[in-house]
Image (cartoon, rainbow, N blue to C red):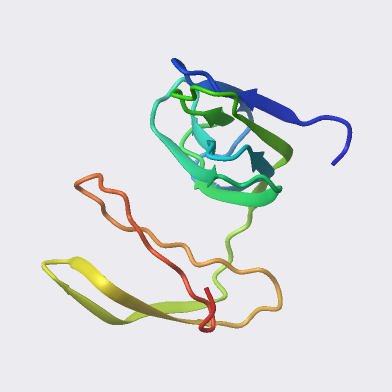
Length: 168
């Protein structure tokens, strides 16, 4: 909404990317980036955060979503200056585009409102397959999020679904 939005057009040979440097971040603090994103049919786009000039990034991807959809990305600042950006990967041989609107970055205040424990897990040698059930006991009338930290020594993509109160 408002007067302006960012549109990136696809390119067959190079990624189309726009990025903005965030300054004044507190190293170790948690932030949330959110935006409304729309992409043309069969098009992928990423909302990302990375260290300035870095190649490692945290990102959320939107694919084949012609209506605006809100996406959020929670990250921990690893530097006082980081980049937030939007990209359409290379390889687009026909006209494709992605639009970013209402970009927001806010600091998330972390307050322990409860506990979490792994109730059941299927796996051996510290590798989980199947279902991992986590029980959360939190008492708050405000927004809460569960922060999971895990080791991924082989750099593989984690494919996971999340259910809250039995709903995906």
